[in-house]
Each structure stands twice: as structure tokens, then as C-alpha cells.
Amino acid sequence: MRAITSSGYYLKSANLLAHFSLLISLLVTGCGPAPEHPVASNNTKKAKPDTISAPVVSQVVPDTTNQTECPRGASEPVVKKSVFPDAHFVLQADRMTGLETFSMPQGDKVKITQSGCEYYTLKFEIETTRFAADTTDLSYWRSAAITLMRQVNKGLQTPLEIVKGLDAVSARIKSGESNPADMLSLGEEVDYGGSDPREYLTIDRISRLADKRYLLQITFSYGPM
Image (cartoon, rainbow, N blue to C red):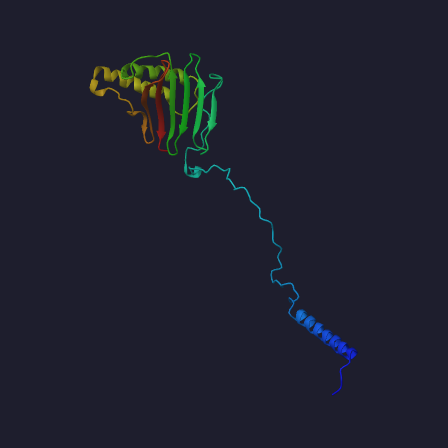
């Protein structure tokens, strides 16, 4: 048996360590993470940032009336500014209804509502402090309504026969004084025109307001057209 020299022993040990180190290095390298590759995408569109838009609000006021089906047409001013200089007319959003306001020299305030489609209607609302009585005294207020409307009519330009209508109401009031059964009641229609189309008026209501003010409502109508 040959003796193993010290130099040979160290040489073999060094070779073993070298092989062992190489093996460890290979094992570590083989178990490392796989290289990363970009994931291909079929979506070639670029993403857009989120945006918040304000809600769209329509500024168009819807028409509730078909003007082509209304014989009357759009409302127009009926008050003469030469008589009542502060008269103010506003056509409403439906393009059919008109509101007109003015003050009388005596301080009374008047509002006229012009409306209707197959009918032409003028509703007068007169606010006054010149007349005062219990609202149940219809005889007093019927006469007051006629007086006020005659004064208002001086500044009107309308196809309605206002004077003829007021004369018909006056005659009806006189008839009621001699015959209580024929007394004119609130809201009752008084005809003063033909039968087709009709022309009539109503004294609709009398109301007491604050500060000794009273409101009278009288409506003139013509139709159907």
C-alpha cells in the first residue's frame, strides 16, 4: 500500500472543493426566476382619463298648445298706452296667453289675462279702494263693476264689444230689481251677441283684500271660432 503524501492530499481536497462550488453555482442559477417578458395586448386603443360632464339642461320651454290648431292665435296687447302709459304686456311661455297690467289715474290697479284657443277670453281683475261694502252686497258690487269697466274700456282696443256687454248687464240688473227671480248672480253668463259664435260676460267674484282693498273679476268671452 502506497502512502498518501500531504501534498497529494491537499491537491485532491482542492479539486473536490472546486467541483462542489461549481455544482452549487449551477443549482442556484438553474432555480432562479425566469426572465420577464411583456404581455402582448390585442387592445391597441389608448385609455382615456375619466371626465365628468355637467348634465345637459334644456332651455326650451315646451309648448303646451299647438298654435296651428288654435284659430285665435297668439295674444297681443289690448291696452292703449296713450291712455294708460304704464301698461305692461307679457306673452307667456305657451305663446298663447298674455298678461297685461296698468294703473288707473284714480289709483285702481288692473290686470288683464288674455287666453283661449277656440274662444277669445279677456279676464279683468280690478283692485280698488274707491268702492267699499260687504262682499255679500251684490247689488252694490254689480254696479261698481260696471262703473269700473266703463272707465277701463276707455283705454282698450279689442274686437270684443265691451260697451254692448256692459249695457246688457245694466239691463239685467234693472230687470232683477223689479223681479227678484231674475236677479243676476255671480258667475252667471250674460249673452249680448249672437248665438254662434256667442259673446257673453260674467261677473265672477268679489273679494276683500288687506288695507281696505277689494278685488273684482269680470270675464268677457267670444266663441267658438
